[in-house]
Image 1 (cartoon, rainbow, N blue to C red):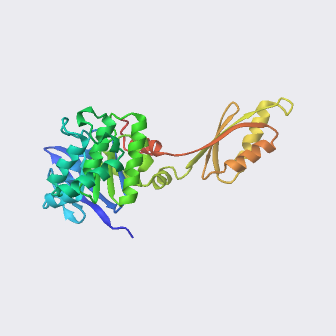
Image 2 (cartoon, rainbow, N blue to C red):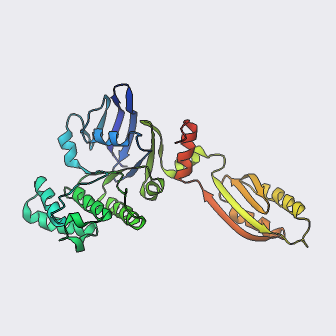
Image 3 (cartoon, one colour):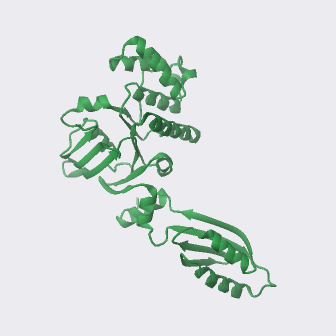
Length: 324
């Protein structure tokens, strides 16, 4: 059974009358990739600052690897690697030289540091850019270098704050795959803060939806989907082509609707000419296809859709009276 590596208990941060983080209670397990999801200004970055001991909570506590971030911030920083939204390097240093400098700051002897830096640069895909000045790096390369900088001290926890901003789609995909690979191989716990839903969904084991300082939902995609869309978690769309020899199109269509309604698990059907949108308790697309073909009409399209993170996110916003 996994143990909690990050623990928030009633964590609250107020700035005067404004509440940036409101009674956050959350546990994140060892080796887990957790996505902290929400719009800009939701309180994600403030939560991270409290985790790192860079700002004190008004109430509550946050512990990283069992260490209180407020009373022992230095110890927490030793256990944690942080990649901010805009990572800074010495532009006139090479990628290698920047990491050697970071290694020295972390007390790693030069001989060990040189071997370690070469190894890490290879792991993040920058081995061929080892002698290139950081000022010549692309945005995606700088983020990879930032991740390498995080890995220098072998952190137990990796915190990534909007790590893919400004990176092209191919670079984003490669960066996320790299995060996933490193987490699985190194057993690191990763907290990924983002407002990009599809990126979070791609690699995170669980997500937390953060709105106006409050954690309004948390869990894996299936759990959240089943909770929100318990009555009809699966949608099927089918399109047919009718032959007038079979009978009147309206009559054939109505008869087909009645037959589909008899399929176990089907809740309701909407028709748009010869297209059927069917809400079900589970994936019964095979049975629906058999019913359609058996009715003497031609099935030209059938597809299924499960609710994704964008649907979940929008539904929670609807329920909480926030349309932004």
